[in-house]
Image: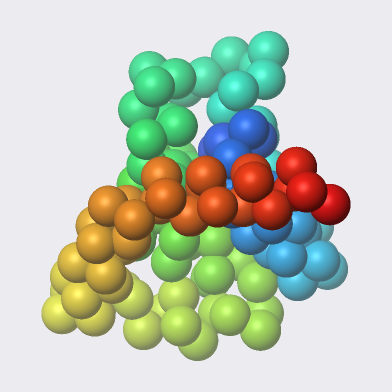
Length: 119
């Protein structure tokens, strides 16, 4: 299995939680996590990297559900789901779900930020 690079929004409380979980599951260290809000050079437009989930697998830049599937394939526990996502109908379904999630993401982020502020 080759390595995967994942760009995430380090300022997003939802993203931080998800990436923390993925780091714990990535026991083999196959994924390089890059905070797209940090000083690192971005491979594409920083705003685009922050608007949608992005990953690079085998030299190909992926976004949305395809990027999640690449990350899952690098984690043995989630690999079966990532492999299943290689089938177009499954990937289309995951992308549709991800697109709907992006609509509610700002509300979830605000809710988590308020929750963190109270803690």
